[in-house]
Image 1 (tube, rainbow, N blue to C red):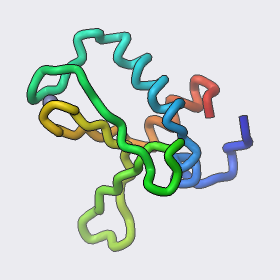
Image 2: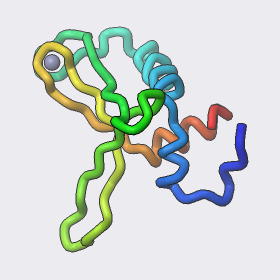
Image 3: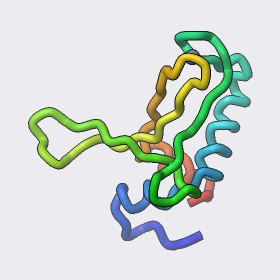
Image 4: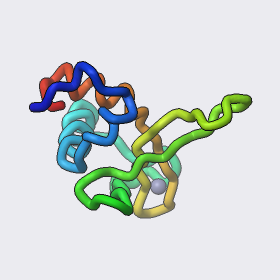
Length: 103
Ligand SMILES: [Zn+2]
């Protein structure tokens, strides 16, 4: 585990690997085994990978109105059946991974 005290939230989000995110999602899903897509009610999902590093999940930025150059960062999870997408806030994921000692 590296020192994560003096890095920005964005730098921390970039450290999250597919393995870390998948493990977190599997743990979360185990608390609700009935977790399904809210649109098609199936349970088949894909986590898109970064185009620069296939070991990292893709990060999607949602722009903020009237805040040029700023946005909210999210990891995306997409339903394989209907393509509905869900977004998981990178800051909260990093916080949960830190609590678990994973990052
Ligand atoms: Zn779906």
